[in-house]
Length: 318
Length: 268
Image (tube, rainbow over all chains, first blue to last red):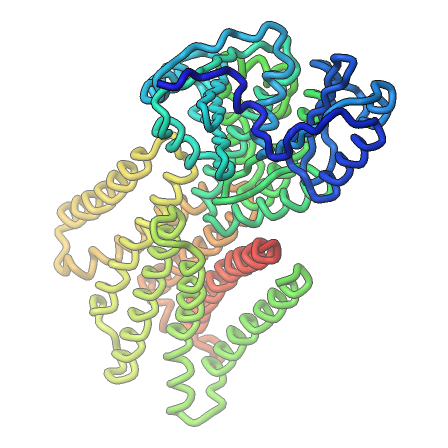
């Protein structure tokens, strides 16, 4: 059996690390990747020992980390100039994987990876569904890497990303393929929700937001049909495009993989979207049913998600 | 379809429906054409107006895929109006060929079946509105039907009706209309008068027309003629108007779905 080395494939070398180059060259290479529409991570390892990570979506820089700390502004060129020489690696990956990466990056005490059988993964995910808070599994094989987020007992929602040399898989396809991956052994790092960690906070908000949208649109669809739901989703798409949010509306569901600068910004965006949905529903089914529907959806938030609703008020007073 | 275009359609349809009602009443009152043409217009006026509503309802049903919950609501509503349309045509045919329609005819059977279809539609709409209590609406519908049928049976027994079938339908229309009217008003209330309330609001128009018709026929006022104009004109025109009002109500729903389908498609 081949021993698995942690982090062997964590940085899948799409663009292998170069020899240290000057800041100007680093900037040029990153610009080149961004201009090519990078969705993924640019990792700079400075000679000084510091690291810089640039999270980008569609060639737009969404977040910058110096070591494990977010830089409030998105100006990544300044630290590059200040730190000098270094190596750069470009890692394209789906936006959802970037959201998970943020959790790992911001975790103050990284949990120890545990060896596990690939066949046991599904049981682990099922068990995590009993937790009150969400759980993130980071799975590493010799030739692939996977992330699975389980929302917890009150919200039946799972997200997954599988990164292999052949490419990336997401959602249900990844969820099906991860426990059936060809390598029998893996290393699993389990990250438990910690709302002291800003990235976790944003994940909680993201889960709650997608759950709310799923509920509201499902009920609205029951009353009015798919045509009306699609029309609302189209309005949300336009709103997302205007605001540069990374929201997709496939299969009559709303999926958000935006990288927000702060949890507060995420909260504002989600509030605005939910308010738009409400304003589109109300003229069709009336204020009473709309309020009922919003209230029922809001009341479906339990455990930690209830606290998140109380803090951020994604669904306002109804 | 843009908002401006849908508004234009609304105005055109509303004007067309008013003109249809006016034409019917004018021909009914003044018989300006030859006897055959007048008789044809007066007798096909009601089924024709019902067919407008039925066609629009059928088009609405097509907006929903098989298995989508609202499909049953609109499909059953469409079946109801188609059945009533055929009933009106049968009634008109009997009247044109025999000059008189018996108190109970094949048309009544079709109207009765139409009420069953309408019950399915309303019940489904109720269960969608009150989704937490799926079966309540179904049991309530059974209860209402049982109450109506048992109630009529009891009345017929107490009054020792000599013509039970004729009397059954006389009472049935009154009770069924009342039940439909109350249910529709409740749905209008649930939807707070917004877009989805309109089709249900308009179906209530039959409560008014049926009550007037039953009252007029029972008192014999239906056969009165005042200043050369028959009282029946009022009752019969109201029926045409009621179907056209339903047609207008469901057309609003059609426009709503069409506009939203176009809006959704605009984004690919």
